[in-house]
Amino acid sequence: MKKKPSRKKGNDSEDELKNWLEWQEHQYSPGYYIGTGRPLRPISNLKRYPYAMIIGGILFIVSTIISVYHSGFWMDNFIITLISLILSVSLIYTGLRILKSKKK
Image 1: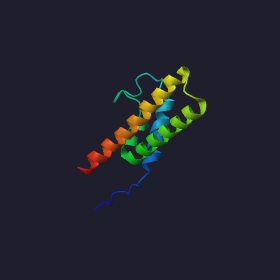
Image 2 (image 1 turned 135 degrees about the vertical axis):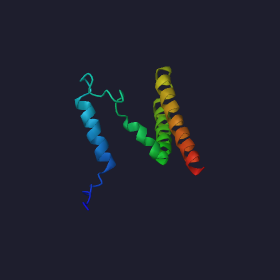
Image 3 (image 1 turned 90 degrees about the horizontal axis):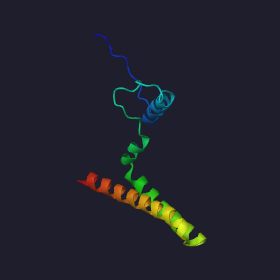
Image 4 (image 1 turned 90 degrees about the vertical axis):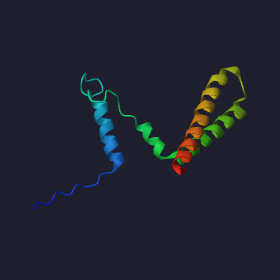
């Protein structure tokens, strides 16, 4: 009986980095990625870490509040403040939703 060669368990992040670098090298080569047709999305792995999403959202809200407090609330800052608040609330909401679905 032949033994199967033992495959070293590689680090997931190293594999993702290699895939990302390969995509970057060939992103303008037509037909290179015919299989999926989509580029790699490292942010999709953020779903594995809902606590990081919640903490990031809270830190983003706090930094936005501090920025508005120190610079004052002007209409030219309104759009940036609104976008950062929407982003931070969505991070917190998504993190809580993922935690709730994991508990079920």
